[in-house]
Every structure is written in structure tokens, then in C-alpha cells.
Image (cartoon, rainbow, N blue to C red; front, side, top):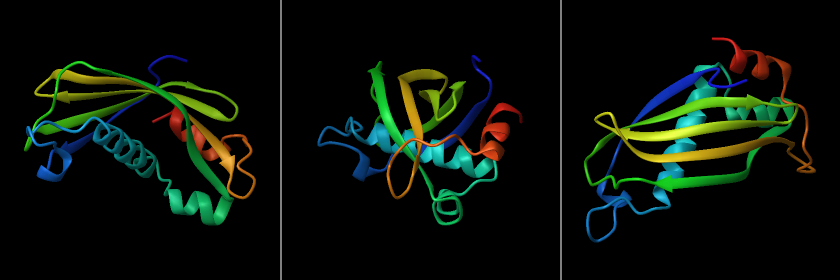
Length: 136
């Protein structure tokens, strides 16, 4: 399953996101991507608090790789894209990219796993979530 669904979320770079040179500090890109994945789930109708409190499930990051292509700077208006590359039994692979004015700044591959909130052992992706991810 490749490029099943793409979601985009706007992010503004604030002063607190930057280093002394006014460039986004590298770890803040991870925060931007986390926000976009959270908003993607919300747009699909699922709050992470509901997953935790009602289903006893959390989504954790198993692994990621990130390529820094060009820096973002203070006050830039960015678009963070999430594209579902694969939905497995317990995990999903998401390709994420960050753009400024149509120019790609960041590309990342993220593997997220659904786990039991108590044991942290992998569990199947809840059927309603998987179905929503696969169809829009």
C-alpha cells in the first residue's frame, strides 16, 4: 500500500523553535511532525486521549529516519505532510515531509506502533482506525 492517504498541517516557526542564528533547531522538526500526525488522527475522528482512556492503546514511535534538505527559519509558514505508506497489523509506516513555499525542507520515514498502554506490547491497530486510515 503506497501513498494511500496524504494529510497536511500548517505550522508557523516561532522564535522559541530556533537557535541563536534564527534557524529551526533540528529536534523541533520532530515536534512539528508529531503535531501533524496528531492532527491527522484527529481529522480521521480519533483523539489520542480516547485511544488511551477508552481503548487502552497508545501510539509509540518505533523508529525514524530524517533527511535535512534545507533549513526553516524564524517566522516561516510551513506545511507538514503525512502520507501513509503502509498499514500493517500493529504498525504503520508514515512518510513525512516539511515544505516552505513548495520547497521541501525535510523528509522523514516514521514507523509508529500501536501498543497496550499498560504492558507496552504491540497490539493490532483498532479496526475503526485502520479503516479510516485506508479510506477517506
